[in-house]
Length: 210
Ligand code: TMP
Image (cartoon, rainbow, N blue to C red; front, side):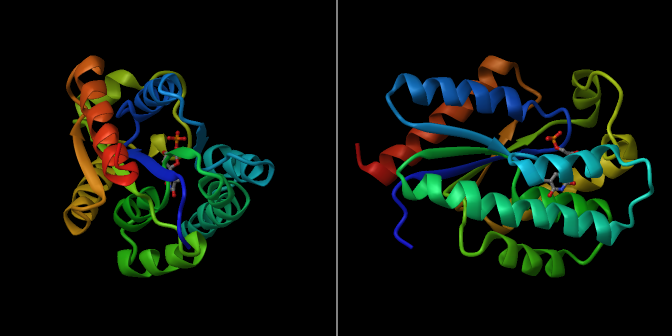
């Protein structure tokens, strides 16, 4: 598939500040005249919203494999119904979490076979690969301060789980140095935004040769 637009994913542990950065990046890109689509996993579409509700708030204890397949189901639908068409139409898709979340959380966090999870994700994403992934690495102490409100089912897993997820993300970044840019998210919002913006500008210059 010859892609016309761009697909950029925002990743990191809970409380890393990626959603704030995604929204700021979206405003910047719109101000430059780009057509931007903001989306997220899980829960961007009608089916996904129902899946998100189960994943984050189910009162029934979910098995690890039930959780794994629900995230994949959400992703498969999201890719076909939203991401692929938007990129084909030349839009810049900014996605809050995608397949790396799955490898980090369900693979490393839940201590399951990361290789199997990578393979399952290849089915769910059906050929689409992010042009760029911004990985916001935050220390658990800073992340805890940023999280507010009652924790959802996954946030409630606690610090040890988040530490495994963070280590997982770092391994994934090492395996994909071309695609994944690691950003120090312990810094101030402004500093993190500068890193975010500069990385996206670099990609646009490369891709669209402006
Ligand atoms: P959010 O609060 O950033 O929208 O993410 C929802 C939660 O779901 C967050 O704790 C990370 C988790 N998650 C996974 O465990 N696996 C996945 O594949 C995705 C997309 C999210």
